[in-house]
Image (cartoon, rainbow, N blue to C red; front, side, top):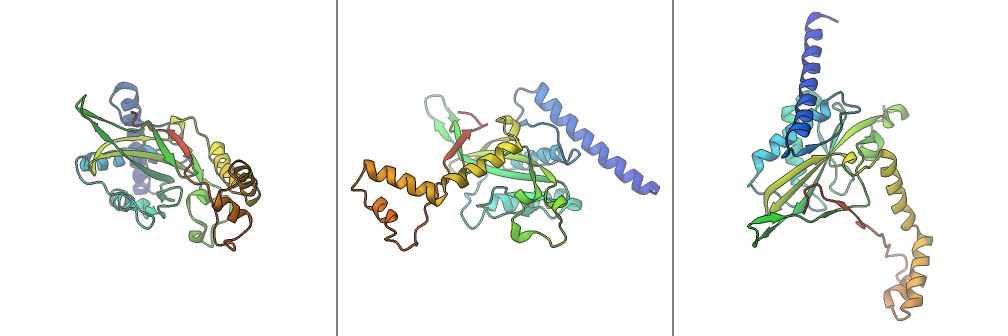
Amino acid sequence: MNFELKKEKANKMDRFYDAKQKVQDCMHNDVECKIEIIDSLHSMGFKELVALAVEEYIISHRGLNWETSNINKDINSENLANYLNNIFPEEAPWVVNSSQFAFDIYSLKARVSVELKSAKGRIVKKRGDYSNSGFTVGNATIYPPEAKVKDIVPQKNWDISWDDDYLNSMLDVLVVFTSKINGKLNDYRIVDGYYWGFSFEDYLSCREFFNIINDPDIMSGLFELILAKYPNQLFTKRMLSDRYDGNVKLQLRKLIHYTNPLGV
């Protein structure tokens, strides 16, 4: 390795070390710290760098409009990904997943994925401040501190050159919570799965659980129980007798709630 490459690598490692120290100092010495994460597992410190960059981005947008995502577009994720592409161009592209996918943004070069979750705060008139819901809704997903490439990248986007080893390699996962009042960004918190005690195995088991309860046999048994208790329930009877000719598929989604790090 020539001198310039050694120097570049040393500078990069220094940057990772500084980021880790800054995050640790924040968590250990600042009661107002908005970051609560464990050390990076797979990104050599890039997780901490990204957490700090995301925090800078959010702070610069406090008091400004914070968009509401829809099924087709998540403007906040797109804007944040563009910011990360500018801040960390060597680790580009920072890719935005569909808003319905489990992980919003990822960089395979940085080995980091970022999930953005937004909550609506409310003003508490008696106290003159604001509050957030104590729980947040997960779309059949809990967020681990790490996940595999094949969990984060939709299969349609897999490169033909990726083998099983690569697909099963891990990325660090950050979860960024934001709240807004009257459509404007108000507060934030940056955590990872260890905040709730989630592991990668918990994530897999949660996904498996929702697949189980949406199994047609399970759903049929559920319908029969409902019909036994509510024999005149029209929708249940028609689903059981297939009156809709297979045009209706019931999925039990968004039934998992976990504590909101922004607090009440």
